[in-house]
Length: 126
Image (tube, rainbow, N blue to C red; front, side):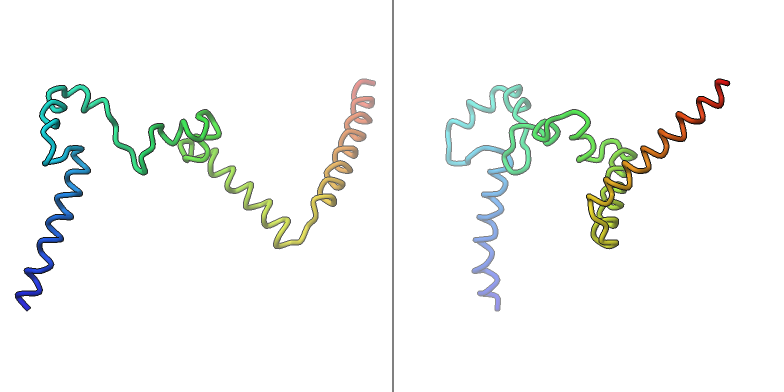
């Protein structure tokens, strides 16, 4: 059992060394790494991002308000968008409402409001 522990230890240590080399960005076998370490500004200028990205996610999404909504930077607007999308989903999927029916009912409602508004303004102005 002690032999088994000794046999697994070197691969684990070598993996740890490889990971630390990747994180720190230098090879222990390379002699050029001493020249790269001489300029600390070059090391600080390089930003390591997950999955090798060069741009931030906000820029990849186009920046501005849509990226803010997707990244939840303005929580009230993002929650409103999520709530509206949920309401539309419930309306169409769960209640089996159709888009054409919704458009027709909205246009009838708009016409009724405009009719009542125009008649009300004629009585108010008299």
